[in-house]
Image 1 (cartoon, rainbow, N blue to C red):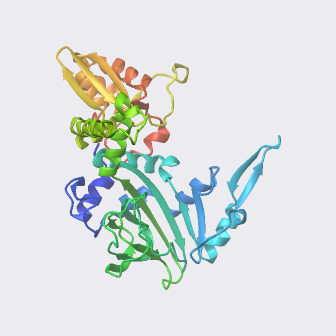
Image 2: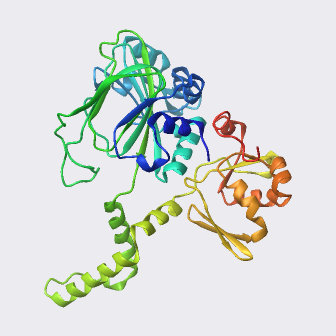
Image 3: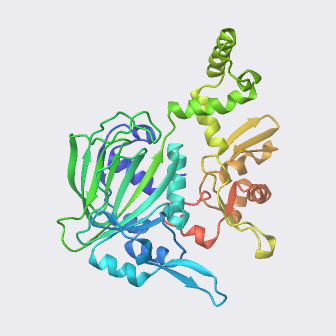
Length: 398
């Protein structure tokens, strides 16, 4: 899947693929205002918040570096039958933003098709899980105090400007669950400056940073932070811990009086480490991801006109002579080898209008598409989902 935002980020940061992710702090700029506004705007963010039931901590508001109590900007919308649904009080939210505040929407990809597709494209690109948080700050409001993240982040400034300070690490590659609390900030300032519309920044895991509009007067800032959580050696060992349960020797109680049993157990653990490598873990992690959320296809709604592969990671296609296997999202589908051209087209991650797919690979594309949609590896390309691709990802049959 080729996404314009990813290509622009690579160019801005001087990257060629995801190999530099997590290595060094780097920043650059995207010189395409149309692309930046296409990703997200302040008004579109507020529209998302207005039309959906939100809850803390997914939606939060901060003033003067302190979280505003949700009761100040949440209102229970009560139906005629007395059903209560929490909704953001847009009047109260507008007052807070007018005074100067920071609005945070975690996992914006859950609510917005453009954010959903951008995260999916980044996952296909990086082969790691990705979520995006949106931060809207007005006037001279400050943001979070100095902190570090347990994942790599790519930050894109979408509107206005915001001051940043980025420091070095005080503990190398810290983890969320770690042997050290890592609560003393580094004194090394790597970069301090202002992020303006179109600027991009990569902050590797563990680097201390903070952002604020203090001293910037009236105005606003909108940026999105793509959080990319990479697998670690600790992740691999945890995975081995799950596999060990297959063998009886690991299910026995530990007997502190039986030294020979300890020796045998150690040998079995060594063998397990040898048999299941980190590469095996990474491949299994991608294939084990659950099926994505998507609109179901029902005949009563009409014919299947267009589809797009919606798996978290690129499906694996394996040719086996007269058959071909598709492995993704914990599933394995086996089709006749003649389906291979259709599979490569339909599982490209790019939208596929079926009438054009037929002209490219033949009439079997329709039947293969129906199978992939039924198995939920492909999603129905609804107008709403289409809005997340239009102008950002080209059709596969183009």
